[in-house]
Structure formats: structure tokens, C-alpha cells
Image 1 (cartoon, helix red, strand yellow):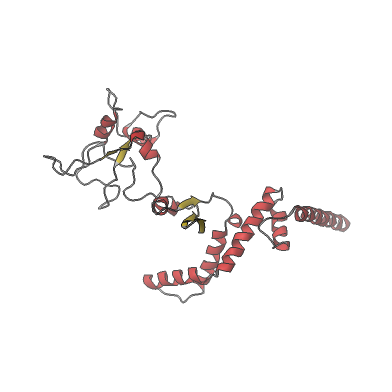
Image 2 (image 1 turned 180 degrees about the vertical axis):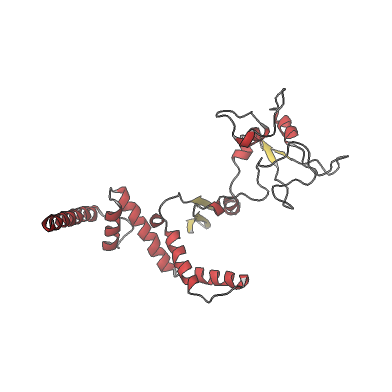
Length: 258
């Protein structure tokens, strides 16, 4: 987490791994997944979960509640149904719409082939943020996610590897509360300076690859140079020269042994 300052204001920049657990939406997030076509008394994304949040009518920002009002004569508080919601948007076809295409495999380019496809294509559904992103941005901070790439380019993976090593060294226990306590202790036991070293190491690998080095060359350069987060051109030239000499000698020795 980085802190960006403007005058007396401080904004935090939170960057997370691109893992499946970080790609989940909130329990009340806008999603047509498993949404019923007909009215339903207790529908929610998860059993006994919260109601789905209200949507909006396009760029106008007018709120749209997906549940009948509490003073409804017969279905107070019930989920309305996809058909009613789509009708309010003015997108319901005269011939009607099925709830979902088979296997949710809609034809390429179609946005009106089934109820769920129509809903997923609406602006408020498209703009739905991930749960983690919502939690951070609603508090005035910035949230971002790493791309999926090798762990040497992501210092969080190196930090997490050290944490797991510390955890394996902690006393064994079958108690879940004790396990959680051990994990938190291990997360805090890695010094900030060590985490910064991991970040600088990843930055040097990125610098090496951006300047044309291959994997073995980048690894060799990282072992030789620890001064900054980027590798100077002189180091790149030294790496290429040293490795080309090593390859030449290796080939000569191999040829002499044949």
C-alpha cells in the first residue's frame, strides 16, 4: 500500500494479487446469475443472503429497485422478476424472451437473445465493481490489481512465500482460532525493509526484461546488481558480454571432450 499526498489529504493506493478470491463481487452485487424470470419471495444470490442492490436507468442515474414495495397488496418485498425489470427499461421483445440461452452460450454479438444477456449488458451491471475494489474506493482510496504474471515480477508473492515459511515453523495446532492468530503473527513478522527489498527485486526484473534480457540473463543481473530498482545500460551490456563469454567457453570445453 502506497500513500499519495496532496496538501492535507492522503489517498492510499492498494494493489492486490490477481487471484480468484480477489475477483469476487459483494453478496448484494448486481448480477443476473441465477436471477429468476418470475417473481420470487425470498430470492437472493446466496441462501439467506442480502437482497441485490438497486440498479440505475442508464446514464440518467435514476434508481431502480428490483423488489416490490412493502405496501404491495400480494407480493410485498418479493423480487419482481427479470421480465418486469426489462420491461421497465423498454427492452422487452414482443415475442418474449427466455430466461437464459442453453448453457448461457449466447450467440456472438447478440445482446437481446435472453433475459440474463439483456441484463448483463446494461450499464449498471457492466460497471459493477469487485467486492475488494468497492471496499477500497468507497473509502476514498485507489484500488488496482496486478496482472497474472510470474512471481518474480510480483513482490507480494515473495512476501507471501516468506510468510508461509514462517507459518510452517510455527507450532502445529488443530484449533482454527490459533491458526488464524499464527497467520496474522507471521504476516506481521516480515520486516518492512525486507518487503521493500522484494519490491526492488521485482522492479529490477521488470527493468531487465524491458531492456531485452532473457530469464537467465535477468536472474544473473539481479544477483550482481542491487543498487536501484532499474538496471543501468552499462549493466545490461556487462550481462550480455559475460554470458556470451560463458556460453563460448562452455561450447569450447564441450567440443574438447568429444
